[in-house]
Length: 113
Length: 111
Image (cartoon, rainbow over all chains, first blue to last red; front, side):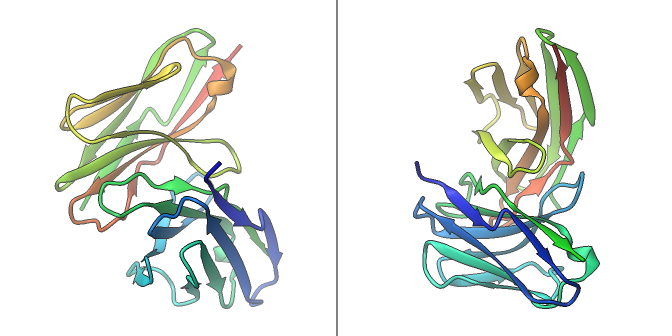
């Protein structure tokens, strides 16, 4: 089945220690998104790639970076995680960005000690 | 700025007791309204996409409807496995792919 895959499902890191979360998709979609979701809150868009074009949300902290080496993979890098960065990180994809359904992966739960 | 308000915040039903969840929205040029189901500790699972007022879609015990100002998710004869958080999101004409989510409705169905 075509799907969005996120690894790892759970990640524990230390305060200030860089961490990378990965997302892959078999849907062959052009757009990949990264969302942050904190407990009992709605998902918050961090950035998205349309093909290789990177689009950063204005309020996304500089501490968050992303890479998309090819159509299938996208990475979220947190350069110096703080306690406030503990959250569920969701990857989503869509065929195009205008009016198309976004399909989400299972998420990576990040814990910062 | 696009806005989405979901009500109620939480809903408790007995198994078989039908009800509706509401999603009110304001958006500049609706490009799509989306319903997702989210179980604890998991990513949102896609349910429906609606594009224009009057549109309806059904899947098993769920039916989604859309007007120019709101959408309803009707749940007919719910079962305990329908317990989850239901998220509504809109895509506006100037949002460039950025979904605006509501805060969700937490549905609990008791056997």
